[in-house]
Length: 367
Image (tube, rainbow, N blue to C red; front, side):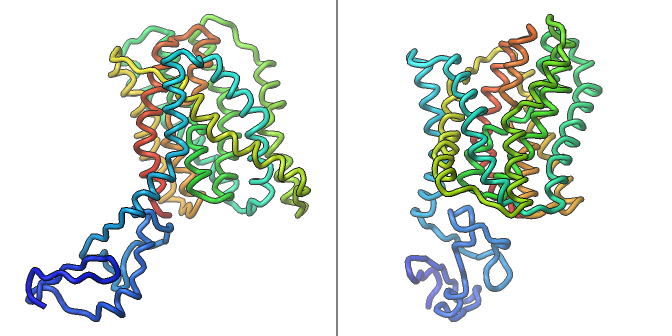
């Protein structure tokens, strides 16, 4: 076989240069080589992407069908988001509609997803490690942001409040469709566990910070009521009770809950599209907020996953949540407490837009 000659074997082109590249039995070696392990081509997520020789392959496999599969995996998240943006632009729906959608998700759709997920969650040390790691990363980011950068910016009080709350609130609702479509039910349970702890943290410490920088007095009793009567927290308790008693939901109940839970995916993305707004004003401040929330969060999360040996779905959820976009409650708190709502809306919108680019890449990482 001469130099520059190409051989077609089962739709894969393998270049050979006779004097330089070692010949091999293509039939036997190709049988050993499982190209579906390359997750960036749309294959399954194997623990190792190397070939049968223990090396990365010396040729590039091009399979357009696998690339289409990758695109189609995330189309259910991107298309509803774009529909939300378009619907708001032409006046069919508004941000108030998004508020109602999010209430439906919070009170109905999310519990219908949470109970089945927690009823089958393996009870291991990761159940505690995952949320505690997320909180530790967020607090570390907060202290770095407040002590190193914010004192030098000399910002107005209301703007400072948005900068602080924006870096502390994870947009776990944005991650839900990606985890639901790409990972299994165990990862979904870890995500909701992180969301529960994040919710308690958000409606206590973060909301307290918002009141300290706004114009309305804080109500500790109201915060406690939100935490105690949260349907998300109660759903987690019900799911764990079923898990510990080795019980399962009755089939008629499970069949009703499944479509209600599945509705959370498009509703979340349409709501985010309705909130979406980006202008050029104060982009440097928005970039700093996103850098502290997602970039520094990713670095700290990766360090924790590596140092503490958090593997599998637990490690992936930790990294996703630590680098999640800025949460919607940043805008909610800004509206309630008279903070800088314009800055909050811009930061959330641009953070979500960037999230569509980097979240699929994080999902390709293996732990």
